Length: 319
Ligand code: NAP
Ligand code: ZN
Image: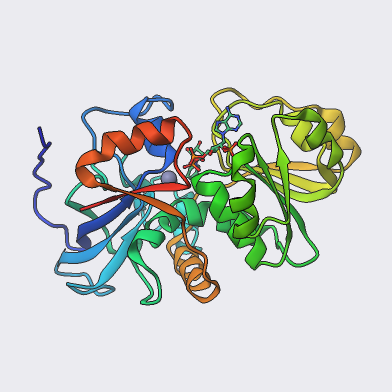
């Protein structure tokens, strides 16, 4: 049975998007399973939306009806706090998420504040771009913030939706890229996406062989790991950055942190400005998601395939 809801009157600054495509992010699976304890049912998941502007509120000036746009994890923010006024809206304490306590993009239509509705450059294909709106910005941002450049040696942990885009962005930034994966069958594709090295992370010996060699390690893994092993892959002053969300608290050996002046950090999505910058970089450097297309009505089949880690590398639902 299709689920219907009445979104009410369109707000002055709201945009209604007629959805053509929506990526299936692992965060949708976390929300469906209430892994973060904040899910309210029923809700419609989906926060990697591409579509066209179907209607605009009377005060909207940034987009026009018929324009192709994207919407990611965030659909609104307070607009007036320190973080919003500094262009870091993703850090706003009142940030609204597209599909938390409201209905998201596995749908015909979705609404958002105009500031979070991002025009899509003409050069980008809608299917391959939908995953950039969450997965893409989530990995682009920390690589950019940590100044990844041709001198950098970067490790990407987990080659799924986020990971396969992280390989591409790290490669575009000129880094020497090592992909860590529990799926040896992904090696060839990881290399074709820009990985210079591939480590089968099921073999602890293979991980040990690269110890002390990396400047920046980005974890996209959504499962518990022995994080100290990955901390040991860092050179002195290196950083282990979490974007993937494991279920248990992260436990690390402080001595490894201290002795090499190493750091751990985390990073949440990105601001509207950073989304626009990331899409421009993607358009100019050919970064695109490798996708598996499902009809919107088969969202459950797509979710199931993501759960089994069988998707190469992002499921996208199409209307
Ligand atoms: P995904 O497509 O399912 O990819 C996750 C990858 O992690 C898998 O492909 C797999 O890669 C690896 N993995 C899975 N289970 C594992 C295990 N037991 N041990 C080791 N590796 C394992 O998920 P995604 O959409 O990329 O999302 C990844 C995580 O990022 C989720 O927790 C999601 O909620 C989070 N996320 C965070 C943000 C943020 O703002 N920080 C934004 C979006 C998503 P291999 O097959 O290569 O091993
Ligand atoms: Zn997401």
